[in-house]
Length: 459
Picture 1 (cartoon, helix red, strand yellow):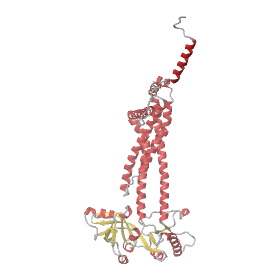
Picture 2 (cartoon, helix red, strand yellow):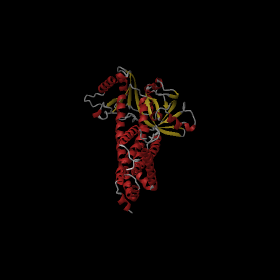
Picture 3 (cartoon, one colour):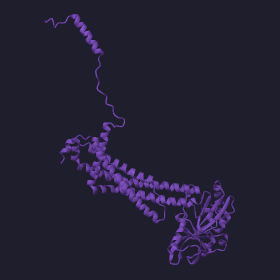
Picture 4 (tube, one colour):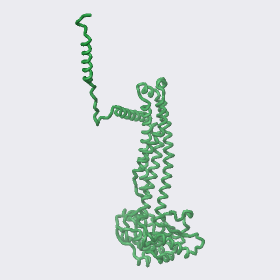
């Protein structure tokens, strides 16, 4: 061995020791760490967002390619949502009008109605009938003597008898049929009515049955506005009698605005020859005495009408009973609407499921190509699920439009307020979208479970 290349054991040991020292003290360079900006989205989230956007575009393209079929598929959802929105609009308008009507009564007014109590099994649990127009006392069991007797009860401030009839009112060549109410002079106070012009009739007018009337705004518009004349002081014909307009009420609600008011005795003498009443209103001094006065009214009228078997020929209602009745009616109507919506949307959802199953069969080859190019099962599922959801949500939006249009026409023709309920609209569209998801899930999963090879072989 060459001596130049040889290394003594001592040198070899020293070399090994130095090498180990160098290896121990040296540092191995590590690759630089890539720091992602806090505002930069991770790559997989960006890709997922792009895929959802692409699936959404593909779904819209597929629906637009079969526009007629897509519209017919949405028809069930459109009809269901439109029916619900129309009913909600009409109900809200009616409820608002009735609430305005009874809000003017205040919280300490009792009304006494003739006839047997409605819903005998639920008496005292909110049974209520809305008094609209009387029959001129026909078949009534209440008399002016009853009203006078009630005025003597403790805690009773005022008592207002009432007669109602429907008559034609004529001024020159203008005419219309309106409700004519014979009321007491305290009616304006009890109902908090405001006069736009003129004055309410006085007790003296009532005593002599003066032919003076106070008309609502709708009556004034129908009879006098076309002729551009002031109603105050004008003479109108109601039925076969002549009356002078002494006041015009400010706009209140559709019932008051379309009514004519005269003193009770005026209507009794000049229009209705009867000794019966359609209703008695009792103003109590304090709301805390309502229950007590209501029981006293019952006892007094049973004594006057000689009722001993408990089968009353009259019944009373308090503001609390009116509110309870309104709540019960609203609850019943809500249940009915839920039933209508459920049936309509179920029919629409079945239609969506059928059409999506057809779409899966027609696009089997497309599904196979996408899978062969790397699309995941979730991508295929999402595409068809988005198509079903867009179908149902778009149908819900169209249904809301038609429902609002039809509802507006109905309430305005009935002179009811138009109430727009955003909650009902959002709920209808949301339920329609959920219907698409629920009924579109099976076809979407079925599409995602196709075998790519079998799908590509499909012509």
